[in-house]
Length: 244
Image (tube, rainbow, N blue to C red; front, side, top):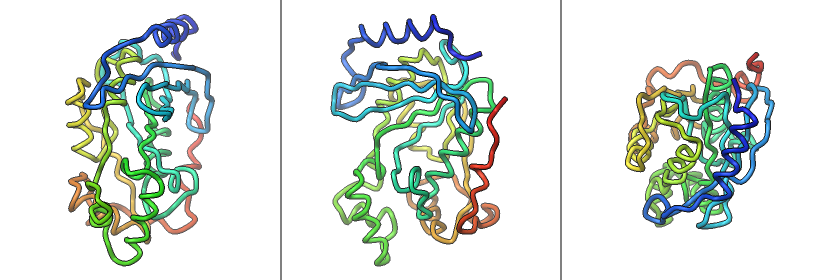
């Protein structure tokens, strides 16, 4: 069952009244600003937009089913990737992870995808393109970020924790290959009951990227036997039919 009209009204009312000391080192506070139905090729969702007190970034949750006060809710925390999510870049696996997650969640009883405005692992779009430029000259993704003066991953998940709290989610089953993400989210008070793997087969352009994720960033990816290479132009995920 989806969120009821009564639940939506209550969540919106809580958002209007919400005040807190904030989450994480930057004390960021997010609150629900708007909710609407969102039928999609992956199933029926509610889209929820969030206001935050730190900057002008608008984060979003895509909610399938009634997740309020529920335990073991399948959750994907997805950081924005303009080049991958919108343009279909083959240099990363972001779009495939996004679409695979939505397809999985759309066929489950409940699920949430949090879309965080953390482009380029938190370094921003322009710096991500600068990092791409360095990679064109032989740097891997970690080396490129460090060369630009950043850590290999600058993302913070305090916003994600606050968003889940605003939805009254009691515990989550996290769709991820990234142990750091699990630990960061736990540190912000989210109960993670299990990890659901989200391994995407490589293509000819992102194999080195995925190898670096596994070797240097600790992602739980088996590059030795990841399944068949995805050929350029193949779009198996987008052909998934909507949940009924």
